[in-house]
View (tube, rainbow over the protein chains, first blue to last red):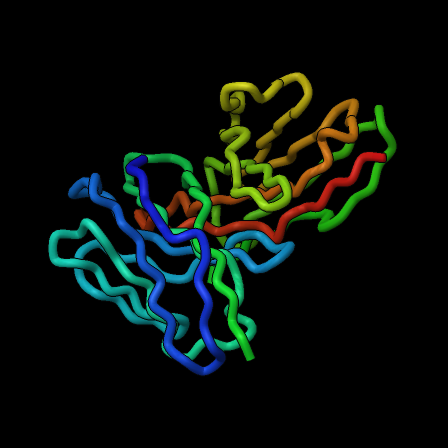
Length: 110
Length: 117
């Protein structure tokens, strides 16, 4: 699985948008970009995923660069419940397991 | 949405005893399930891949005789930590993907906090 690079930590104020970056310069054409988050003492939770086009769902938006070498997870209005570790993972249908990097620890300040 | 249920969520056991953790896919079938281990302040590390009807595949450094995996049906995989020691205390997490779709999304259990005393 291709490697991703994320900042170790980020801070946001409550009710403000948060942009979580991820670099994946070695992404292949068949790799999907997945985002998961892990709240304290819980298993990872699916957030969003995409291939080429930007994606929106009820939790977040995913903005994918035109060359696909980077992407940004956007939380439109951070809440205290969004404080978690966010993982950006590349995965394709030929792979088996998800490989987790250190992720980005997001702190949300009231 | 699809759900993976893991049980128990928390267990404390005495050193030398065995502990079984169950992972169930509630509304989909999974020919493959994955077992991860997570130590405090660290990321998830894959331990083994559980294959329905066949032997599990273990990652390098994971003792297959200590971490017994059984995947007897398309909805259930179990991890048994045998002769547990305090260093086995960790957060164990399972995951699965729906074998019936080409969707790449994975679903994770809520995790099992194992404490060996």
